[in-house]
Image (cartoon, rainbow, N blue to C red; front, side, top):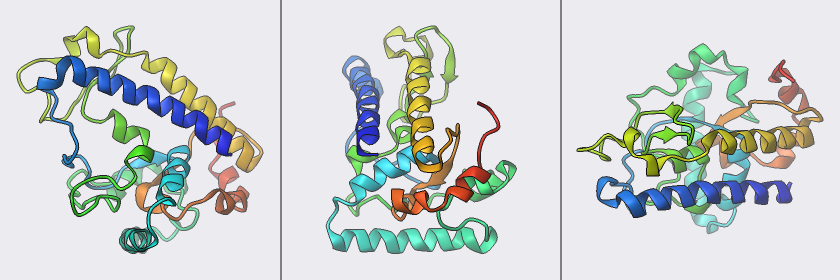
Length: 227
């Protein structure tokens, strides 16, 4: 498991290098910087791979901070559980019909992320999910395909970033590598490769590999039919 998380860390480092390059080339157009937490609001789905990597960073925090974060996270999880009782340990979103996910993660939710410090900084910045690393700039593959052509309204106020070739990256290849790692993770946990299992950041601070290993039945019930 540790070796797999290290491989994922290398993939995330590639994302960080891409973002750093974007800052170097278009820094005057990008507001993303230390202390900015405009996007650290509400709930959003993250992969099980992200959750376990985040947890490995969370475990490095001082015990008192871990307790504080878990208290906030438990409040968030209890709010969801009161409406969706099936959302319980190991807190996989996939046990809930996907057409109900928007109700769990409403866009208007401005609640601060449980991992945001009082100073507005991410407590597990080096272990934050891939979604957090990709947010703020449109994702345009080197082929020109627009995988996600929206961006933070604080960025690129005067220009269209979609037309900036230097921002492009081989995202298709990167996401293919991510999927391979995810399938290997689920093969290790459930005995079969699964394409998608998602959770939330408040749940990630409780999830660990041992918990998931004994929840094989849950994992299999959420299994993709695709090979």
